[in-house]
Image 1 (cartoon, rainbow, N blue to C red):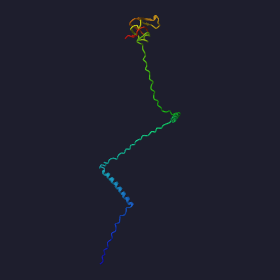
Image 2: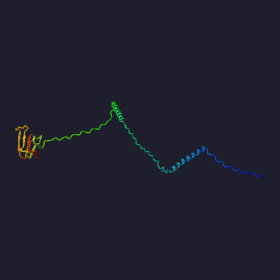
Image 3: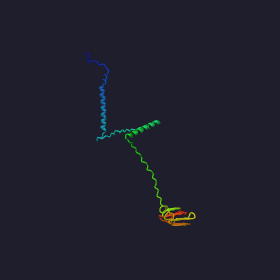
Image 4: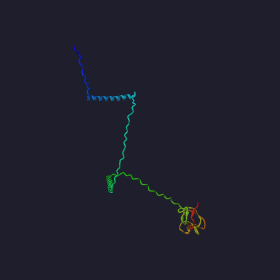
Length: 202
């Protein structure tokens, strides 16, 4: 009786799996991204405390500092004519403002007060008498005066009612050869010559 077992199949090389299509690749990328997002969310939930607070450090604060750069100043040299032209422009502009009724706000500093001369103290009647004629109370102070004597041979003095020079005007007079003293009253005219300085007695 003949054998009915089919003969063995020959060995063929394995069929390679089909290449992934573009839609399949996009699906794989989308799935990977979603998984990454889910992992970040899970990590955030695990880090949080039971009471809902998070131990994660706060996001750093970024401070932007702006540094101003110095502006370079360009020096322009002007000729004499250019300086004159610009001066004339400034003058014309000022005159135009004045014609338009625009008065510039200019503050003029107050001038220092003129120095005042110290008032001279009024000179009162003198207490020292040399040769001459004096009105007591105006030229010389009333009181008792003394002298050390004559400067030459004779020291003359006279108390007068007035300065007329007449004999009737003499109240008292004298000639000193040494020290002497005389009392003068206000309103009298005292005349002296050839005597050392008469000083008011202290």
